[in-house]
Structure formats: C-alpha cells, structure tokens
Length: 416
Image 1: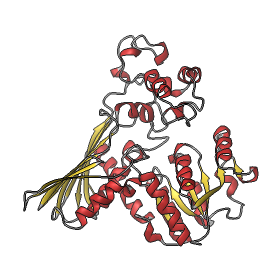
Image 2: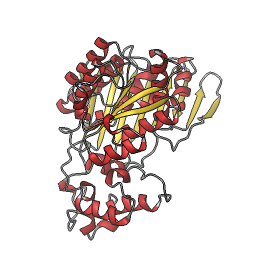
Image 3: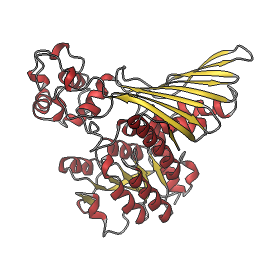
C-alpha cells in the first residue's frame, strides 16, 4: 500500500495520543479516521481537529470489539494500566500498533501484548522515541564504526527536572506506582532502552538504590497549606503551582494550542480557568500533601553481556534538561548533552565537538516526529526494518527495569 494514505485509529486521545496523531497527519502520509476516548471533552475536541465522523468516534476501546478493522494502524496511548486490553484486541484484529511506553506496568501483561503481536503477525513499535532522534543516530554511528574502540562503560543522567517531578510524579497521573507504574518504568524505561540500543548488548546483572526523599509529609514546612492558592509560603516555594501554570499561561502566544504542561491542567487558556483548576483539581495541591509514592531519585547499575558496565542516575533535583551521557571506550571518550557530542581520540589526541542539527524544542528532540514517520512508512510499505525496535526487544528492555526495581526493593543484585 505504498502509494495509499495510511489510515490510523487512536485509542486514548490524551497528550501523547494527540501528539502522535498530529505528527502523523503533518507528515502527509497518514489520516486519522477513528478515535476511542472515554473523556467526552477530549473525544469531541480530537474528533473535531481530525474531522472524524460521529460513527467512528467511540467512548472507549471496548466499543471496537465487534467492529471490523477500521484502519491500517492503531495508536494505543491509554493510561499505563490500560494498555493490555486495547493492544491485545487491536493486534488480534490486524492493526499494526504504535504503543505508548511503558508496554504495561507488569511483566505478565506486557508478555500478553508481545504474544498477541507475534501471534497476529502485525508490526508493533513501542514508543521509545529516543531511538529516533538525530542525536541518537550520530552517537550510534560513532559507536558502531569503532570511533572510541570497544565500549567499556557508560555514565548516564536522566535529569527529570524539579517542576516536571512535581507536575507528573507528585501531583499528576504517574504519582502512584499502584495506579500507574514505578517511576523507573514510566519515566526511565526510555533511558534503559536507549542505553541498550547504543551498546548493542543485553544486561547480565543489575542493582539499584533510591527512594522518595523529599516529596513527603515529613518534609512539609511549618505553616504550609493544603493548596498553593491558600498558602502563605507559596511565593518562596520551588514547587509553586501558580508560578508554574500561570507562568506557562503568560508565555502563550495568542491563538496557539494550550501547551504542555498547562494543557493537562485546563483546556481553557485564561487566568480564571487556571485558578479554578488549582483550587479544585489535583495540580493545585501542596507537593508535601499528595498521595504520591514513586521515587524522586534512583541509581541503577547494570553489567552487560561481555562485561561492560552502565550507571543510570534518575533524579528530580535538576533543571528539566536533555539527558547527559558519557561513554568510555578503549580508544576514546564521548561526552553528550543531547545537542552536542564531544569526541576525544586517545590515539591522535584529537578533541572534536559535533553539533546535532535538530529542533531541540520539538518533542523529545525530534524523536516523536522520527518515530511516527518511521511507523507510518513501515505500515505503508509493509517493511518492519524501518522500525528501530520490535516488540520482543522492547519487552526485554522492560524486564531490565522490573529487575532493577526488584533489586532496589530487596537490596539484592538481580541476575537476568
């Protein structure tokens, strides 16, 4: 079907589903023809934006059980705990899948998805968008061509960002490991997958340490209120909700779509709407008075097959910046910050900095766009080689994350 428009169904019309749909349409090779979304406001707005008729607008993925296949591919971007149902159903109906990460919160559910994909013979790409950035392509080529010799160790920082932690992992949908997933899975399965992709190796052993150090009741300052709008300490608080969300509102260009993270709080770009959301909704709560339990810092140490080592640090207490990675080889060294790569050659003494030509303001440094373009092209041509991972590879990376969580909780070294 290389000359035809790829038809897409979107299950889950939240932030990620909307992002992938927009990239697919902007690429010019795809059309969104159906949507399944339980929230009526999101469903209506999504259907209007993509001109989807009422008969192809559903209030949940369950409504698709008795329907013939409506599209060539499906974007599954429901909440983490609700991936397995639509993914298994849609794979069984013959849809190629673009599945938001993580695949599922637990191994058994992720395995069900992988088995359904393999049984049905469809293509499935888990949204490990970091594989698809120009930065990754440049770095991967340096490693694969032996620019620094044999890779011996990697040091990697995932700087979550203090306000991002407060938004998504303290006040937001990913705050509770029971209702979403452990933070290492929801946030840093990107990083584990990326590190394995760069190294080309599997993980042999893993250990991990970390916990919830700051965003807890014991750290609450004396006199702090339950909500930021009622709090005398709010002006001097690093995690002030009014500063974050009203600041985002002030930076908006008139007429533009409401940007993330403000779009999660309210769809109406007005000060009155933001203040009402902060007064009544979850995003106005004091960060020391929430029902969160996911970690705010974690370190993972991995021993790869062949003996190379990897250390991953994920922490809330940083600016929200690009990942930073150092790679140590037998003949050289690479230091990367998402935009530039410093390459030092031990043999010649050459010290070179390579700049990456990428729109760093785009989603995940152009990774969102790259992923969607690859998926649409793979569906259009029937060529799975256009995807940079398959469902079994993604499952293997998830299992490293679950092993790291077991290691953290039990204080042991886990062998895979």
